[in-house]
Image (cartoon, rainbow, N blue to C red; front, top):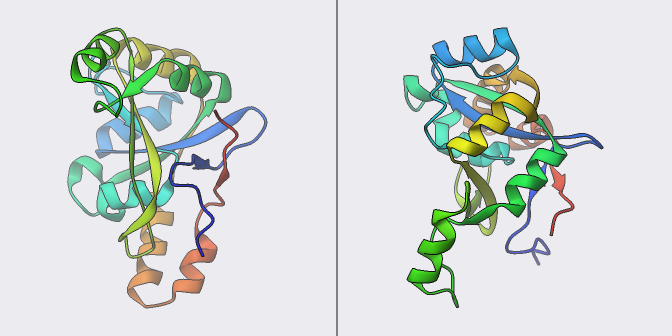
Length: 189
């Protein structure tokens, strides 16, 4: 029996930070790694950017870093837990959820700098699971906070993604599972 709640944030975190993932092209990734945060250019500050605490959901989205050149580099971004809490507190669902009607959702969306979306979590084969994983869309106001205040560290985990993908392709699932980042349930309302 699966005892994982339908919606639960699972992440790598400590007392001060929580890790999220994003995939970018080489130019954006190299600039972010050199500066310790994202910088414009090449990063677009006015565009909504999505952060994902789930490593496997990021692998699904970016095809282990092989999907396309725009997502060839997988970055792990450690952000302050206070910023993450602000994002959760100031978000609205990316789509109307019952019992919310469309007009009520449109009003909420217009004043919310954050979108919250729950998508099926993924297994090592990137197949959907029964429980959901959070994605957080940062609008322009939130992007400025993310880039200017929340980011504590950025690391390139592309090699790790490729190594785990190779283990999965070889059928070495226990080894692949052991190599995954240790994500634990995150204490959030």
